[in-house]
Image (tube, rainbow over all chains, first blue to last red):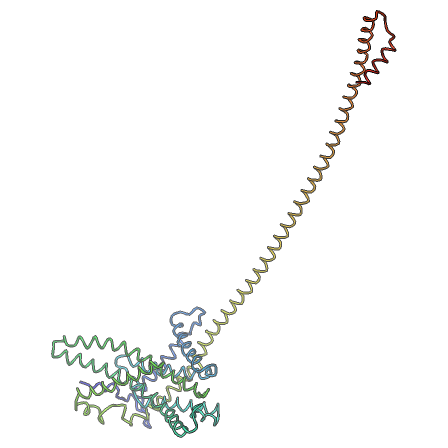
Length: 242
Length: 200
């Protein structure tokens, strides 16, 4: 029987010179891009005043992210809307498309979530530096703290700032790996327990797996939401400093 | 927000447990199966392709969202909002118009009512004046007739009184003639009757 971790294996589909092979991961990234684009462009093809179901869904995602930025970043966050929206769609579809049996979850790879998180981290830091210049570093000096504690507080603030990309990437990666591994483990129980009990032992793990799949869909959404929300909060910090 | 974060941290714990459980059940077979022993995520040889395709697909998605998809959604939502606000504005304008028309109508109604009252009052005055005039006229007439009747009564009374005197003279003459046996002088009788009438 295959290992529960086998589903995370990168398989080359087409070789590309320079080590940039088109793999199952690349395929599902491409499909995520296509799905997001078709979902939005297809939904808006009629441009109806009174939207149908598809257009309503497309608009509600737009409004959902728009509201998230307005509530957490404010009016200045408006110009980052396309980027934040892209992050949300990319992570959400990475998680959700991974729920299709036999598909590949590219957000279950630490290198993907890591690069995304480092990108968010660098981008946000750059926004802060461009907006505030060197004054940005006052972010690491808490207001109202006694000066005597600065040698203690400033390193803590810097470390907590630098650990942002780590927590951001590991949170998403670990959730995806844990969920998918658990599904596979219980699916394995269906076979192994069923084989020795004429199938009866497989019933309980199947029921559990059905519940877990529902739970995984929720996690897929929540993790995309958390990733995007944290991006917004980091942006807010960079724009407004404290 | 905090609950989601806590939740995701709690979610990470089963990950470790599940992974540990997997290792426990699968035993050493796992290490042999997965090349290099362990998670495929930790194989650095796959990193360049993953990073490359991540950058490509994310950039493409960003450009598609930024330039193609989001403007369409935003445009439609904005158009709808504009239409709604325009409709609301129009409704407000119509409401004002209705209010104005209503005010005009009410003013007209009030004017008409005032006019009617004025005319009614005038008519009433006219009727009253007419009545007063007629009443005065008939009162004059009645007074004239009363005066006439009184005159007639006076005449009748005088006539009756004159007749009564001649009867009294006759009766006095006859009485004197019977008592004295001689016919009295009519002038003396007349004088005596007149004196008696004056006394009465």
